[in-house]
Image (cartoon, rainbow, N blue to C red; front, side, top):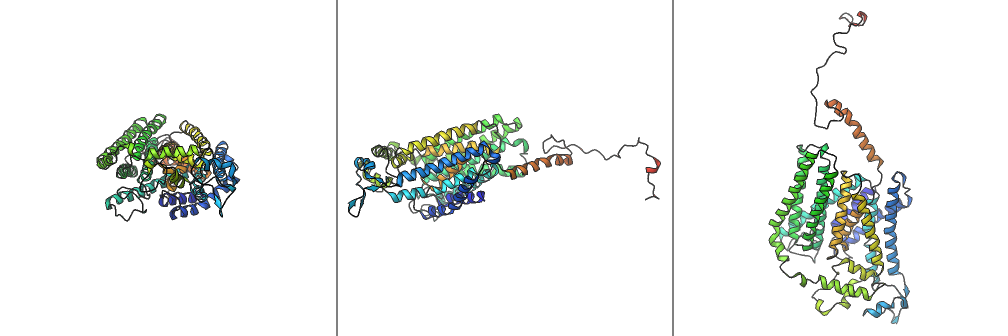
Length: 513
């Protein structure tokens, strides 16, 4: 049941959670659909005893409880009514008037200058928290299946993005009114967020290719199934690079290059520790390198002209840097309490400089870390510092694990790359402010926790391995010989041959028969 509910929540988040601000009907629908998963995951967390998981189970519970308590703590600090004197520094340092009630000053009010926005922001965390808890309680086999589901969802978004560009600015496949009408956006309203999903897709497909190479000792490359899978992966990698080019996201393309370097490192790390056929593994490694190289060349050839239009202006003229500096200044002036979750728009409208004025309003700081510092004050660096420390410890454990060729182990190391890419993207944009990408982030983060022990799947593997000797015997090969090799069958001989003298009473005659 946990797998089904997690798959539903993750699918709905990617399909309907591409908006850049809270309040969209799609976001609300995903939150409602994620409630059953959240309830089930919390109940499981409360009743879980560890069992066969031992230390692994305790690690999962500690990380899960930390996440829940951090969210509840932030909500309590932001929304509990407090004496106005304790938080008067906000109204003194920022040009925001005190909260009034029926014409008089309210002596008690919350830290947040926009309580309704704070409630909406906390509600938006239902989806990623539910997905994090759900994935953390799954076994290795189910986690791999969810990653393949995410690849399928990314591929669908990719196809829609390419069709959007082909149909032009008037395409009916653009699902948001305010969007980048000339670029590929897929299920999103913003091309940068579409590009983020594409480099996540590239990492997941690359991880599958690497796991294919790591398990090559048990495969035959010339089988129709494997050739078809390699062709599909090759086509998907090329199409992903083409979609990134059509999105024209500078940050997306830069982080894609980082993703490719990360995949090369992951491939080499797995190759060094692989126990398979060295020659065959090296051949597949070279094939993976050729696939990635061809994909980059195709993307450059396909989208060079479109990308050059994005680099034609001076990056210093971009408003991202002034927005970040102004946000940091406002954050320091509202320190240590912050202005409240979801309060960026009204606060920035008050503190923005004349040089930053434009026809439209600034909906985000384009730097999630600066915006979190403004909204949460001293709580932000504490929570982010603890989360980053956990990520570093978990990543070191994953990369130093003894198992390196298992598909789940490779997926875990790829998840560290996904988390790093999204955090890096958050320095210049706000991918984690969308329900879709913060759900992907939660999925990748949960993969870093040890998988739950799955007795049913282990028993299936044991039965499969138990059948191997019998299959080898019937195929005429030794138990330790790989599949695909066989020995010539010897002609049938009578037991004992012709040199054995049997008692006459044992020999049957035609009359006896």
